[in-house]
Image (cartoon, rainbow, N blue to C red):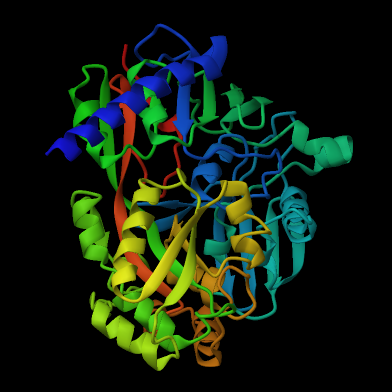
Length: 512
């Protein structure tokens, strides 16, 4: 009991210190005496905010939501039920190796230039050729883009691709006119078609946008929005309680009662799409051995993590997907927690005395990620693994010297905005698509090729389920869980959170 009281006291102490530190860091613009959001200004403290003005130099749900205030995609995902809806595109048609998009008319960029098919072509070409882009792989099969007219565009692909809409969501369209005018400096102006316009950006500081009063759709109620990166969970909660923030993400489970008790704040809860797992990269020893990968699965007790760390606020994954994802297979069974089986497999793999590994994470990126990894390390020790935790800044962890450069053998990650199994399989497990996990299986690749060319939904789902069975045998990962996404908000902010972690402020209303 003394130990528990000590931990709680330390948590409260950290929050008090974080509140003071946050006030010092934010300066006059964020430090305000108001305890509630207003229609003039809303402040969001997020665990992740862009570190660059290049909108293609990232690949994460939180940052997609931020950028979408300025730039817009052709299509977006809507929920309940899950489906694709048009944004800059009004409609589309799948014609084998061709996708025909009909673009909305009457849309203008923030500088007044009209939106046309030429802007889409420019943007996708930049995604493919920009050396700093992390999004070009989504269009590697596009061999030609044919502008039929200003508002009709045909994508010609190498082969039929039934999941092209999934590739197109989160891919924002920039202004070709702005590129012609500003050249390499175009990102400094951040000209899009969105509901908000760019004001300012400080690396590691504030990202500020203001309402676009000439927006083609419904006008937002809130005039100015400030995004600020605050990785420390306690600091975000303290900022909300102190009135220095109006919305925060990743509220720790143990802080939910505290936020709810505060008369000025509330918790917004939604079942998240982010799938958490441990990546086991076969390009590195000892994970080049399937027996070691299977041993890792037997040595991790995901149900215990959900119960004890997240107080039951999660959903254990029995396979590579959650039940709300296209391609989910209810027949999958996760590897049970069996440390003895893990040690036996390690011995068969040539490690009778166990094996030392490093588990990489980016502390503060995901809810209670360090605590999760500490528990994983303790569990895996029982199964014969000696685990050292290595925490890195997100830019290092996710960049070319980390996950996306194929440099990390073993890491903790959450894949967000997962609507279709193909996205996960393509980005992490298909041969040669990315370097995130250097897994290769010709049979798996063949199934992915086939499902991508299949327009009939039931047949396509069956193919995805077959691919999932292969992954559960080869296990280049350890499936963990989906979590409930927990946000904190001022009580006068009328808003329902999305399951994909994007925070859209044009959907918010402010109660007076």
